[in-house]
Image 1 (cartoon, rainbow, N blue to C red):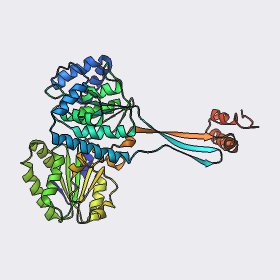
Image 2 (image 1 turned 135 degrees about the vertical axis):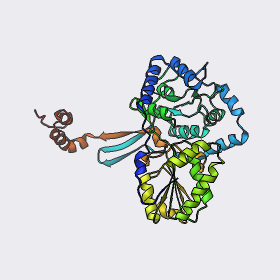
Image 3 (image 1 turned 90 degrees about the vertical axis):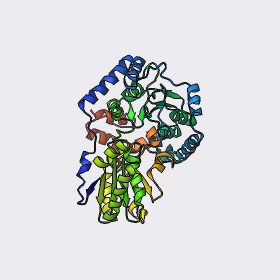
Length: 427
């Protein structure tokens, strides 16, 4: 891991993944083909990229139940409990419509409405991520979205992973299509014979999925343009070096470009963690991926004190932040840029990834400076409510017309003056 002892955080300027022009052209071509050829394009690309000849794009209810029956009982119980925790957390986020009479004859307010339809992308192929099903779909369901569509690429056996289908069955998502990559994003955005278009697309994916989301944005809404996973841990000599090393590796195993960062006030402790990382790396099944992440992206940043450590974190604006110090709440009060914050030595990042309840679809690449984790508000929209009585318009009409006329919008002014008793229409 690279040591930084002089406060130089120039590496932050390089963490964004720039897509090559070839990848961008490929995604544009895929999207155009899906818009033109619909299901035929989806099947062709699934054959080309996944090696699967699809008989049907839609997953049947029977197949979902069969898949769930193959999932170990212990895992099904974990999915059920996690779903309950996630739902309970997100139910606390539900905003309410409101109106109020601000003065005589003037009623203002806000109407909260759920989106009509949402597409949830779940990575697959060689992986199985039922947690992504729960995190992407549950807040949409809690928000009141009527139609939630799940897309995920098939595995080598020709079907979406059993755990993914079991999670969908548990939470009541039944519109599931076995297609992935940029072609799945195109189908959700523009529709095919089998897949009706949606209003918003959420969920993590590879570079091609991210580029496709970027391409269709504007025609549909998206959650974010997610980059590689990040974890920053602030720890001092009171922490267990082996635990901290394990937490850093929990994100390093995601991707070669994942960024594990330790910020510490103790150089001796940093050395202990570095040695533990090197030791534990060899025990991981995904050692090759994790090693690339650790040695190319990993950082150990030495800070003078807790205030400097917090300042470093606020510049990094990490996706995941663990505070494993003697008094984590003291540093917590200084943090204002982080996607998810894990307090105390027992709050390991995977607790949030799978089980606690807050969403694990979190802003990356420093976007925690201005963005928030996926939540219920990601799936709703607000409409303003304005109601003026005759008396209220008479009392305020001259001011409104003057304002409009000052901006050179005569039509606006006249629209108000037409309703005013005794008003002289200018011009």
